[in-house]
Length: 73
Image (cartoon, rainbow, N blue to C red; front, side, top):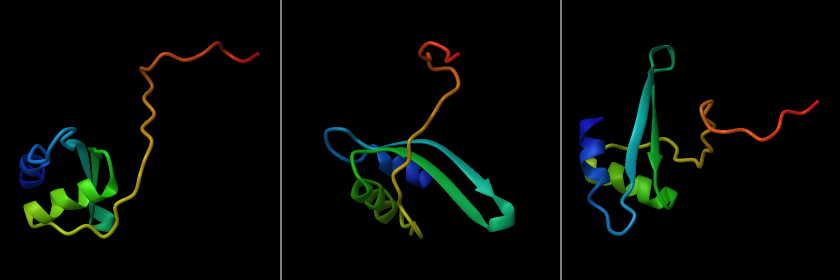
């Protein structure tokens, strides 16, 4: 995680930023949440850090503390 976070700021303009990660022991998987302009930018972080990713996919983060619209009846 530290190597990935260190490489995240190495880009130009809107540098990708590692927001969070979660380890899923039963799956032997690490989920990494990155703010970036593209999947290619995320893959570049991995290459610079010497880490390979099985997949890089776009995700939408929904937070419970964000304001919501009017409640539906």
